[in-house]
Length: 189
Image (cartoon, rainbow, N blue to C red; front, side, top):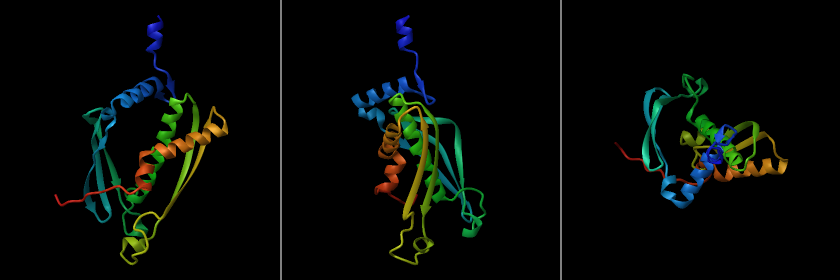
C-alpha cells in the first residue's frame, strides 16, 4: 500500500510536481537529457502577413512530433500598413515573454509546494520605426525597453511571492533570450 502511495503524483498548480522533481534529478545526473531544440518554419502570405508553423521539437534525447501542428498567423496592424490578421512579430515576443515568465513561475512554485491561485500580468514594449526603416543608426530596431507588471495570488507570504517572481525572471528562457545577446545565423536556403 505504501509503494502505491509513493507513486501517486502530487499535483500542484496543474503540474505533476512528483514528475517535475524526478525530471529535475535525472537532468542533474545526466545533463544531456535536458538538451532542447525548438523548430519553426515560416511562409510569407502577402504584405506583412506570414504564417509560422510549429510541429516538432527535440527533448529528452529524441525528436517529438506534435499530434497537431500549430500555426501562428502574424501580420501588422493597419496603421503599420498590414491587414491586421494576427499579432505582429513584436507582439508575439511579448506573448512569448508572458507565457514563459508565467510558466516558469508556476513550475518553480510547484517544485516548492506553493499553490498559485491566480497570475495576471501586463507587458509594455517600447520601439521606434526609425531603426526598422533605417532612418537612424542610434535607434534600436527592436524593443528599447520592456516593462512587466505581475500580480500573483498564492498561498504564500509576500516575501515568497516576490522570490517566485525573481525565480521566474532568473530562469525564464525567453527572458534570458531577449535580455542577452544570442547568436543568430542566417543563410540562404
